[in-house]
Image 1 (spheres, one colour):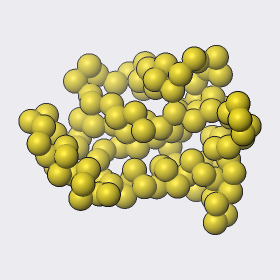
Image 2 (tube, one colour):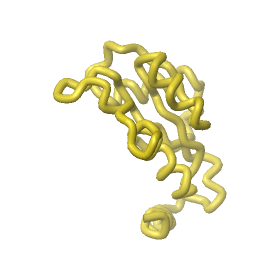
Image 3 (spheres, one colour):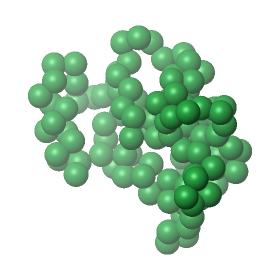
Image 4 (tube, one colour):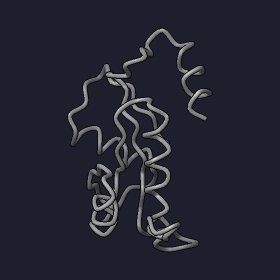
Length: 116
């Protein structure tokens, strides 16, 4: 997966190997409709969303963080070394959650944000 993503991004002129202008943000909400608390379900002793975070980190694309809507997600992820940004629980989509996270982080307009 890492080679595929690097090869894909390498085709774009804006992508540099150091990835200093790239931020990966994973939206995560506690209130999943079909399976509430899904992001916190344990897989091999770690929350499901941590595995997504870890895969993004291993890909080496850029700084990785999780935009969360509840402190319980932050608590579960930070004990495993993940970076989180607390956002409103009232967003209609993950993209809206990511936009709020970008505002809170004060990312420049030149920053490339990948929604995972």
